[in-house]
Length: 263
Image 1 (cartoon, rainbow, N blue to C red):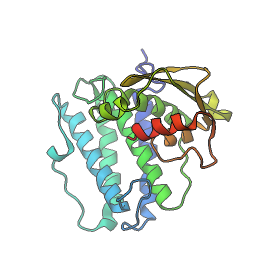
Image 2 (spheres, one colour; image 1 turned 45 degrees about the vertical axis):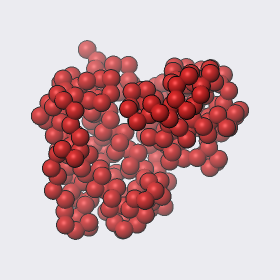
Image 3 (cartoon, helix red, strand yellow; image 1 turned 90 degrees about the vertical axis):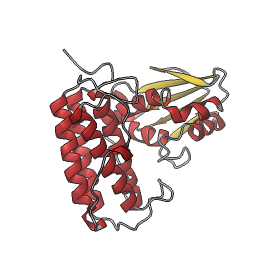
């Protein structure tokens, strides 16, 4: 039986993609100055980003390995940091490998706490894949590289973000400020990326919340482009006017959405 749960990727596929993302992340950080600023994470340096991810990976590994059933936050898990920021890439690689091993040992259905709607280890393979992917893109942007997100990862990430926005405690206030009354935003993956599951999404703004569906539709504003760039747009790592994406319709609506759903 498949464990995809309508997300497009199985737990093992997410683990394999996370493992690949960790390799890209470590490779990129090895070539960077730890004191370099990360423009897509204002106020952060490359060292701070590496510390953040290394701590998050170890926190998630602990929760999965111990099958933690009650809320546990990163500050509650003791993590030893390297004394030399130059050692952070190797430290990241070690923590990431331990996380992937714990996720694979747990499988997709181990019951445990998660802050999303899915209470189990499957939530964490998905969350850690996209946490790592977006921050890997941050590293590459800081180093002047152009990040590329695998289409299967990006399509899964779009849906994970939309699902998480609806349940994350810190988004309730901003969503209430959107003042939605049925306005629609359509996102359409173009080119070869359009062949990747699922390829198109429509977001409908409602008072204090929103809904989303897959499939083709006409929106008040439409955004077209490679699905990896659509994901990075939703995470604030691309802008509507940077030339990689085509925007048709109400740009102010899109801007309001992006401002209020910053993750």
